[in-house]
Image (tube, rainbow, N blue to C red; front, side, top):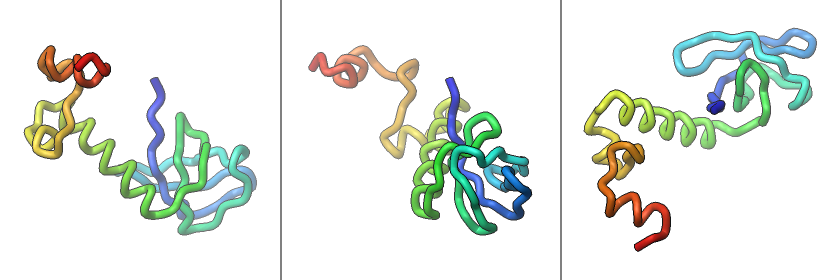
Length: 101
């Protein structure tokens, strides 16, 4: 499985962008999205930018990734937000999730 990370462009090279996101800095291939500028947001999968996004979408994706990380680490924050990994759900919750009310 591949998870996209929102990253903000800080500098560019031909065909690449230096990006910061989720506590790291990466050189990202931009062949699939074209020209980008510092300040732009990209959704990055395995070192390749797959989509240009806006700051609001970057915040939404980062929030979802934070919930997944919290759930994986057993934090109560994800449960308070109404998010559980399937492995932490009851059989009734799994049935509801799969449409088997």
